[in-house]
Image (cartoon, rainbow, N blue to C red; front, side):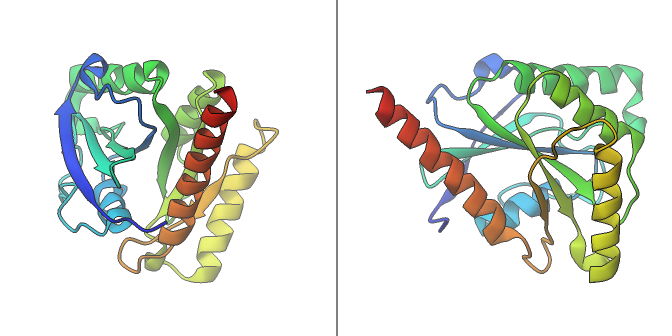
Length: 206
């Protein structure tokens, strides 16, 4: 897929105020500082589209970006940032849950995981929550340029084995690097494939 244009549309904390165009939405989520904004900027070829920060927990709203005037990237708040405090974390949890459980336009949720770390309890619990609620998702390992290819493969295999303890079938899995632009084509091709199937389904219904 060629990204011809991408622009910011709206930020808000209320899913009811999200765009009403009915276009498919691909949401990105993960623990704070996992590289979400950098990945979005890499996918869209727009360096400053999503605001990056070295400070975790900066994204606290639902951010919509329209791509090629035909589908949205949605930047969701990061989960599990301890310094927000209990009340702050609960507020973010409500925003996230309201979007991923109630937003009909959400076509796929990309769950970002730092490839350098072993499976984390908070991520595994979130993935199980998605499964329990029937949320369509894929896993995206970030920062693959920070470790060797062998270590990356071992870490991903470890994650797969851990997931297969409770999952019969694994979701799609991608490995990316915003610095090296690795995984960009694979992610965009996956999105394009889904968009084409949605268009085909819509034409079949006519």
